[in-house]
Amino acid sequence: MAHNRRHVITDVDLLVTQLDNANLEVRKVIIIDGESTYYRYVITPGEDVSQEDERVKALALQVHTPAIIDAWRVDERKQQ
Image (cartoon, rainbow, N blue to C red; front, side, top):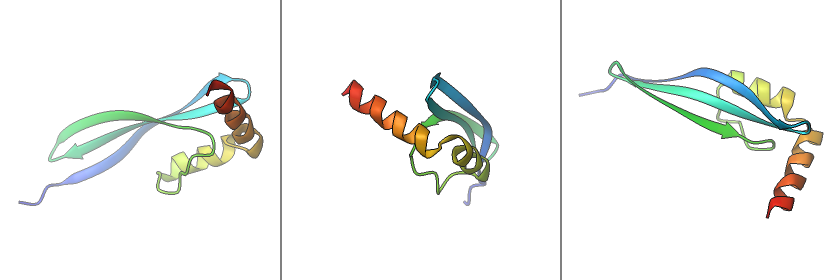
């Protein structure tokens, strides 16, 4: 029996943890035969978004500038 399966992005939030650091939090719902499962995930500056929803790609392109990506990488190195 074939299942009716859909992936729907329900929300994309910009999480600013510092002035020079911005993560994207994506909320997605997967609907299979009318049953919904929600989950969230975070996209960090510089992360590949080529397989993401167009809204996520657009926001990442706007917010994850080269300066933000560089600042995030510096912060990551400091935390190691």
